[in-house]
Amino acid sequence: MILQDSQAAHVIEKILNDFVDEEIVFIYEDILENFMLLANHMKGLCVVKKAIQQVKFPDLFNKFEKIITDNALALVHNPYGNYAIQTAFEVNHFINLKQMENYNIFLINL
Image 1 (cartoon, rainbow, N blue to C red):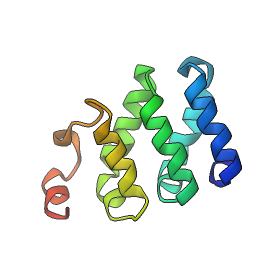
Image 2: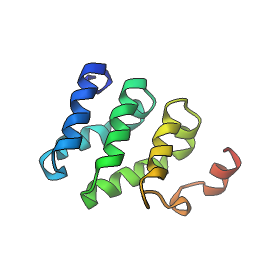
Image 3: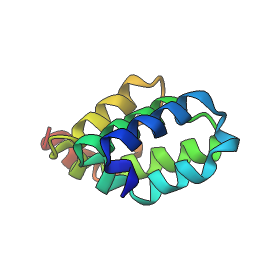
Image 4: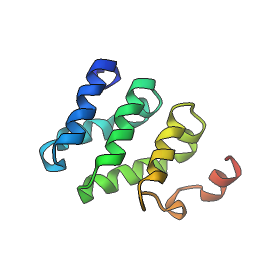
């Protein structure tokens, strides 16, 4: 997968940084489709973090929010995935903890 290659990851990060969401929806969709694989991979995580930081288009934003909240428990227990959660928290108002499935289980397992 191209997003797990270190050189390709840098190119994708630059594209995410320099283009508006509407022009690169296909890249965001690919990241979303492979989110857990990428978020749990050293190089893929860099792309996921950049996507979380850059996404502004409401539909894409909502998809990222849903995939992160739905997979929060698995992400926090992964050495790379937990940084995806951390990045989402750093982005102002990205995640509402109460929306997370198994909210109480999530807090107990932290």
